Length: 263
Length: 283
Image 1 (cartoon, one colour):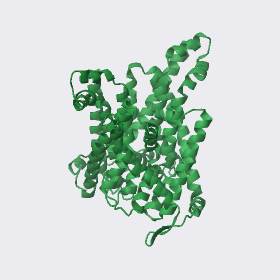
Image 2: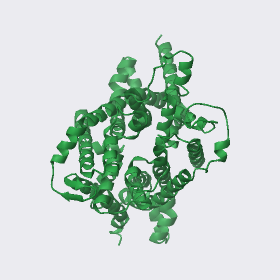
Image 3: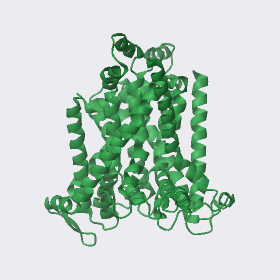
Image 4: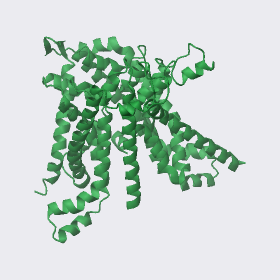
């Protein structure tokens, strides 16, 4: 009796898990579907037939294309900066004991847990107080700030698992400090660096709240979308969203397959 | 040289965090005590009354945000815990597939996901429009621009951040401990309540922390799904900063929001008996 009860409970939980997964995925399906909608009216909320024309006219709205390009450039630049300085700090806190380590950990935690709204508002307060112009550079500053901790945490997690005797062996075999770092340490922490880089890029390209405070007149992809909610989102946005989704999933799957092969 | 290495490695990040995280907080504190306007400029007058004025004007929205954030967090906990439980204990070799499916929404931009919900929930959109044309729902039925839409949107958007930490905590529970409890004649319910649930509490703690703070401070869901009746504190702060250029009020509100959330976290940590908030959140 109790065995049968257990199996029924498990089956219900299994079905329930799938329901939640479907619920989480339903807006993705809507986004992809309405990229194929042959809409005639101004709004793109009711289904009016299948078309591929929005894929052909993907770049026909020049403001939107500029916004997407801005987002990609900002994500790329902020990711590079974040990965370089974040990996350095990740190595420092994962490998060494030094003065100020506690304060450093606290700052890293504070940067992760500050609500985006407060981060954006405080940065704007600084820029307003200092009379600094707001543009793509201030967006990059903000994006590095909120991505930094994620890179530090992923790199540190990797550094902690490293065996220091590998580096000692390299030094004993006559490798220079820099050579040891480049040929032993860096390859070993690389998976953590790559994971951090992907996170930083994804966080940057997705951000709306912080960016909305520090953008000045520079428009990014999420800002453009929110700005056009009132007038109606054109299907090109759905197509771009679908393509970003597709590329993201491909990279994630390729990464998982590569990791499995290495293991 | 070798002694200096960690300091040199940490220096660029220290500078970034100091200049763009710490200094801005000080700037915000300073602006919140100033008076003036965007044209003539602002001067420091130590007007602590800014806080009182801002609070008396916008206490409704602040309380509403805490309520919506709290309701959404509760909903996420109730919806998410069984999912985390099933994946941790029953999914077997398919664990990573389920985790991947839970993370799938993150490959779509946050604002785009929320807007897709507004498509789905539109009064005459594909869901309700169809149901209305079949006569299943009355003509006047609507969800968009209601409390349900906003709390539902928040629940949807942050749910994976609740499921993942709970999953991580449950994954660490040794199944043999549960078996031992059952061998000692604990019923399945008792084994769950006395063994599994307490062991998963650090995950619940981290999950609540990771969802309540961003949900309470989120302006996007209220803006896209809430209409005019469900404005949250995030929308007020955004408008005060960006449209009204009323920096002192906006700064005072941001500061109050942050203080309320920090006090909330602290009280919550104490109530749960967790020794170290940082420790639990870092896991």
